[in-house]
Picture 1: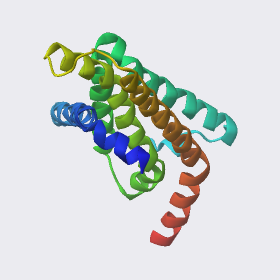
Picture 2: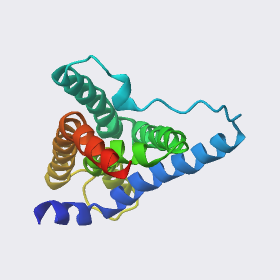
Picture 3: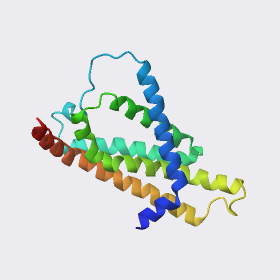
Length: 188
């Protein structure tokens, strides 16, 4: 319940985070429409990895996703610019990835996406948190630019996003392929 209250309290940062991502999706769709369609389907991420051990795969995915998360969270250092750019680019990439969307893709994305997408939005909210509070101060809506409570909320958002990213990486490597393979056998 505390997490939900934190999200609600920071709803404007969450909305800004989601909006940046959606703007990237829209832009990605516009790019995608203008690109020449080759009949080469995208490789399914989990099928390409082949001989890599699950643990190495987990570490690789975790490190990659943590890098993205840190870029979003540390966006406050650029007054939210790098957070916006990170979410926008993520939206473009997801738009292009989803252009070749089918049942198999869905099954290989959804189980870990349930954790990864909210983690990305929460990391984005963390990256927008400090600039948002400074903006409120500059608009005379607050007495101090940054309070101790603002910093606590920023850190809580950052830690929640990191926690979700760790869960998402674990699910992506150890659970998603099993669920997808079972469901694909049932469908076929």
